[in-house]
Length: 186
Ligand SMILES: C[S@@+](CC[C@H](N)C(=O)[O-])C[C@H]1O[C@@H](n2cnc3c(N)ncnc32)[C@H](O)[C@@H]1O
Image (cartoon, rainbow, N blue to C red; front, side):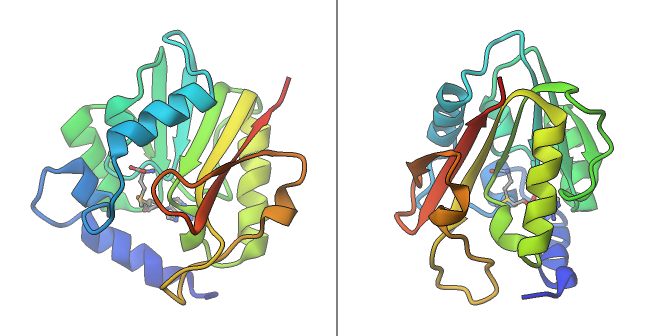
C-alpha cells in the first residue's frame, strides 16, 4: 500500500463527522478497544509522571489524550479535521504534521508515543523515518503501539517482531494480532 492519500482521506473524512465522541472520531467504534485502559497501560509502560512533557504522534481527536495525565501534552496528526476537533474538544496543543517529518527539536520531550497509526503508513521506509523521528525527539523513552503482524485489511502495513530486537515487546492491548514496542533511551 504505497498510496499515502487513501488513509489520509479516510482520516480527513472521519474528522468531518458530527460526533463529539473521541473514541469514534479516532476509529475505535467497531473495535473491542477500551481506550481508557490503553491510556492506563501506556502510562505504566512509559512511566508517565505528572511533570513529564509528552508528545503523542498521530494523536487524532484525542481518544487517548483525554486520559493521559502529564505536565505538558502536545499532539501532532496529519488529519487537519481531526486536529481541529482535538483542539475544539480538549483544548490541547495540537499541530498538523507527518509522523516521518516532525518539527520538534532534538530531545524536546521526556517521552514520545504513537498508538494505532503505524499500519496506516505507506511503506516500511516511512515507518523507519518515523521511528528515527521519535528517537530524535524523546529524551527518556518511546512507545509504539498496535503494530499488526497480520490484518483483515490488505491496506494495512504489517510489522515483524524480528525487526524490533533491541526493544521491549509486549502483546497487543486488545487485538492478539498486534504487538507494542518500547525503548528506554537512557
Ligand atoms: C486509530 S487513530 C489513533 C488516534 C490516537 N492515537 C488514539 O489512539 O486515540 C489513527 C490516527 O493516526 C493518524 N495518522 C495516520 N497516519 C499518519 C501519519 N503518517 N502522520 C500523522 N498522523 C497519522 C490518523 O490521522 C489518525 O488520527
